[in-house]
Image (tube, rainbow, N blue to C red; front, side, top):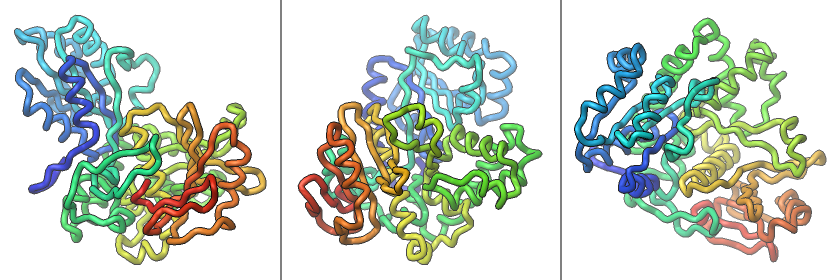
Length: 409
């Protein structure tokens, strides 16, 4: 995780350290610049007998790509089973057969990172089932930024692990929370985000053999970023961008596979209907979303899009909490044919947690009719609903509805 003087603690670090003591291999997925490489290297510094393979390095990649068996031979030449770090593992899917052999033969412990699931999802790729623990590293959570006053929703509760950062909640709404952005001077953040989007386009899109479609993709990407947090009308997007409907669907799947976008499906009792209902898409980081939308990265943006940005920030935090807690919770939104709506529904398996999001300091019951309807319709699975606000103190709005300031989430 880059930074001149500050090293940020991450929720994932102690989890990984416990696994290492057991010689357990792991795979960390996450978008570029979320700190995966930095985190693994930080852990490696305290270990002996380590070896690294950065597949970002063309020379290293070409050597292993032309002869994946080289990995086995090089590891077997080391007297004591080493800790092996493979960075950007998705770049050589065929390497995973060699990794499996070395794990099965107890000849090495592997730490692997990856910023795209696209190649790994292709038919025949060995995803090392049962051999590696899988994790996801997101941009910084609110507790990693030191903002939490109290976590009041127990299944999602976390504590602060960093303090004293010169970065505000409003900064996050504008610039997002990629570690490099957070640790950089304010005047440099816009150029970092611009560079990020250019690198993503150059390395990910061209790597997917979409160079001939780059113009179409650029038009789509700006509109998709502006639509982030909605159930986009694909036909309308196609007309506005001049991109065919099949290409629009292909591009959205590309964004999901390269971890740039989170897909959130509707909550429906009938799973078959869920497949036929439009999902919502959230860009993984607000700064990246704003930069791709070509929006002005200043306080004027917050004034113009406060509701959109606040909802987006809360949804992203819930997604990141679920991953940081390593829970098998599922996240949905809920909307009826009559327009009743709840922004976020967390299914813990045992219960449902409905969460409405309002970018105001005070909320009245008349503003959360959808939440009241949901609590009545699903009273067998939920007993308490929440409203996340910009207020200062929690408020009990009804016997089963609690309003929480964002920093009490």
